[in-house]
Image (cartoon, rainbow, N blue to C red; front, side, top):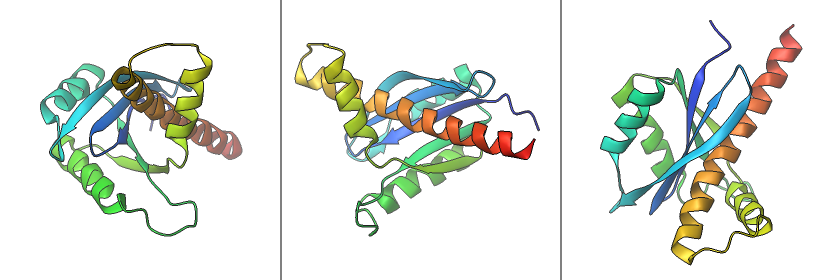
Amino acid sequence: MSQYRTILAFDFGTKRIGVAVGQEITATARALITLQNSQGKPDWEHISRLVQEWRPALLVVGMPTSMDGQPHPLEQTVKDFGDQLKQRYNLPVEWIDEKLSSVEAEEILAQSGMARQRKQDKAEIDKLAAQIILQTWLNRNAAKQGHLQ
């Protein structure tokens, strides 16, 4: 098994889905796009184009968790989304705790001094949150690989 895979990551939300791409060889992630999630239906056509373009070996989905450890209200919806990804694209899906990824993305955006309209900010936050989710996964995976050697 090659440790140099391309990975797509998703920050699932009821209105938008942030998407990021990363490479294990460089252990880096970058924000790609924010897709609309209209009426609870992801833009599968656009997701299919991203899968075709990037040819990932793995999909990572941020799993929301509550600060108190209780199940998050979106947990089952996000799990269903990940299961659909797995079925549609016949790719493995891994989950990672996305607690505070959107908060971190908001802080990064605010510090960057980017003055945008509110709607644009939300789209930027969602794709940046996906990047944070994937970078967290890459960092943890790299650490695991380092311990195995």
